Image (cartoon, rainbow, N blue to C red; front, side, top):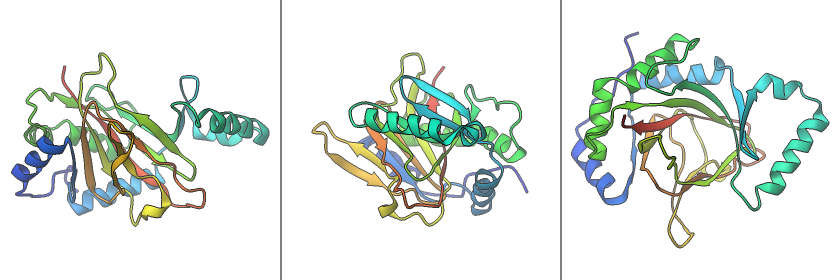
Length: 237
């Protein structure tokens, strides 16, 4: 199979107009269907996930280490996070880093190497510059993410000094997700109300201008399917 590529489209001007107006955007059918299917299968079956939590600072560990911890120790951490999450910023989901600078991290499977190359290719970056109206976009960082039952990411704006983030993106690789399962990408207005919420739709690229308050709602405890995506930021040097 050839390298990953954008699906043909003719709506760039309309997408740019919406992004300029609202600061956020959904782009369906972003990749060729076969590419999206291939990436979904890699994330579902061949990704060595880390558990990532934000609780008294960010922490990560291989998922297998978490699974091998005594049940009582896992419950203690879960209970501490549950209490803290009522009042402050917390997060819990699975992740696997792909690139920080535009170059792939060592040890990625070929399909994820291809994805990093695609995200930092001139066709994709040119499309992103056209859609966002920012000629400063120089590269994309990326991580694979997986939200399972009870995973979540609290409200934040993505603005971090020194990271030079122009826009955030989410490449959704989840099939047949239901809105009542949770895990929606929610946008919060200045009045504290949710202005818009997006269901993760397969092969759809979600984008939002940085800074902008948003959060991933908690996935319901009864959900067995994983919410799979590749997320990152479009950045300038």
